[in-house]
Amino acid sequence: MDFLGPLKPRGGGPGAGGRDGAGDPNDPRRLRRNPLVWIAVIGAIILYTQYEGGGLPGTQDEAPRRIDQITDVGGPFELTDHNGRTVTPETFRGDYMLVYFGYTWCPDVCPVDVLVMGQAIKMLGEVGEQVQPLFVTVDPARDTVNSLAKFATNFHPRLLALTGSEAQIAAAAEAYEVYYGKGEEGESADDYPVDHTDYMYLMDPDGTFLEVFPHGMRPAEIAHSIGQHL
Ligand code: NI
Image (cartoon, rainbow, N blue to C red; front, side, top):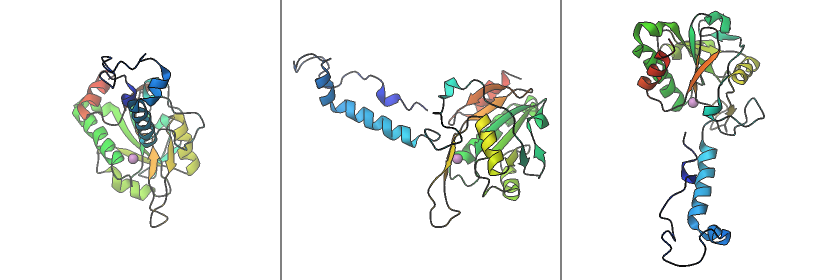
């Protein structure tokens, strides 16, 4: 997540220590000539464009908020779980919700995150039973109730995988400020990636936002953070 890393000031670049004596180090012309500046700028652009969830064609026009600016996501949704049952936030009133948006065809990030979600809840033991893990697809065209049923049982016995119409998914994603967008099709029309925000959201038993966990956190870290709310 530290995609601004390369822009951090570094010591010891060319001219550090002033040995070459080529004038004022703050001279802007000198800065433009410095290859490290260009390497940092190009690196930042590459990192930003590859960052999953960054600047994607999503459900909203505004730029995504940084993770530390996410303080109040959540809201109404109406979706169908992998048993074919209609669910809304009210369905889970009284339980903490741990919500993740992704898609089952995701080659790497989603399966890992959902596995981590299940492991974190298992690590909490008995108190973890207050937490309802929810997987919301951002790819309802391929993630049907039946395919989600097969997917869900691989990760946690209580995981509910949710789908809906395009409009229902868009509304849920908007409530959680989740960005997603279909990538280019490969060899067939049903072969495409979906870029999406890969955060996990912890909501309290009233459905209000508590905390967000980025991709890359270990199950023990997430379990520890959740445990402090239970
Ligand atoms: Ni994914």
